[in-house]
Length: 573
Image (cartoon, rainbow, N blue to C red; front, top):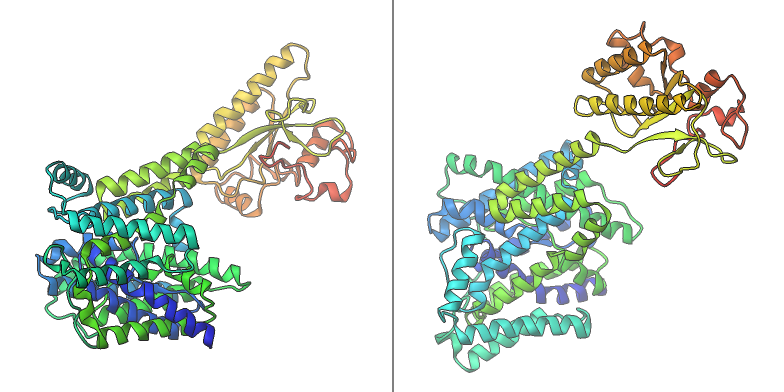
């Protein structure tokens, strides 16, 4: 029990400034960030499956909340709080229903490259929104690109508030110093917040620097008055987007923590637990929340073993609001902006993007497109852009998949990619090809053209003395699906080869695909003898010889089984 209590004490030093900072980043009064901390932590302790996950306001959600709520609030803080609460309730309801329906897999819509670009865009938007506060001035918030222009114009015109800027920039320096020197063991955020309040109180800086002001005293209370059904309709689409991002972040963090502890966490239970926490927080004056990638590691490092750590932290934040809520009248807004900026910088993953560029340029470009979609189109539209790009990535991977002509390497079992293994020889009289994707309308034409090109190349070699091609063997085990367009193209390919005296056979075809072809009326064109069980069996039928153990030809039982057959991966086999 004591490790959890100690962890809760340490955690509180971050919960208060982070909660207030993310609330302001979302365009809401600072105190709502504390409500969105206290209530969800207590609710998650009862219903959440993860033992040490800390949930609360999050930098990735703040701009989404602002984009959804501020246009509807009409410069009314009370209405903004009510709308944010409604948004949280709607997000929670979506997550609960999705959890009951076991839809945790939907977060797979956001692939790693898309998430890297999306979070980089979110981080830059949050930083841009906090820079004016950090430097002691304000601008009319419009969109990130124009906000950058407004910031530059104000700075160039000498509009920086020197005292506020000194406190804000100094706070950033101290926080990073603590991270570098003590590795986060001593919370630099707590040090700068307390230090800034002391300096402001002693030197009466409240007259010259903007301050957060006093928090309302007492318990979180319902704040959903004055809403209409039209507000719920306007928030429906943002709620879906926020729910997707909230669970994506929470699910990844929860699984990482569980794996580190040798445990497992149900994604659907996590979704439902997070949903209940959002509903509870929204009803009692909060806004949408998710798992915290900054506070959870602090709790873990401090020795947290259960949700008691979060409960202790929530109760201490509540005690703060009851006993000393007025102390925040000495907290400079520039310091709170510094807290948000230093937290959100951790979302920026330039090394991750560089790795993508070195590994897969297509993924790297998709990540850039996701980043630009968020930064230029806005965070809500950016969600749609990110999901659309994820679907595009799926199509691109399936549209032009890896494909290979296979051959035999003397003395080596199996059939191997001839492009990666120049020493691999074509089977006399046969061409073996492999297509590493489902066959569907977008790629079946490419498959047809590619097979024809391989056959044409083999025919040219035959004109120079090589054996004439009599059979095309498709190593079809990687083909996991086929649609009607692809079946028609397959018939066209078969007719083309038939006119040239070449037989097309499909080796290792999966049962469901054969069933689909049969339903499509292809049984006469492709009788059972055109579906050899393995590539080796197809080669035997062509060559009339027995596969040897080392050359890939013979009829030993282990060689004839599907998994034993020479189906090369992309690793150079």
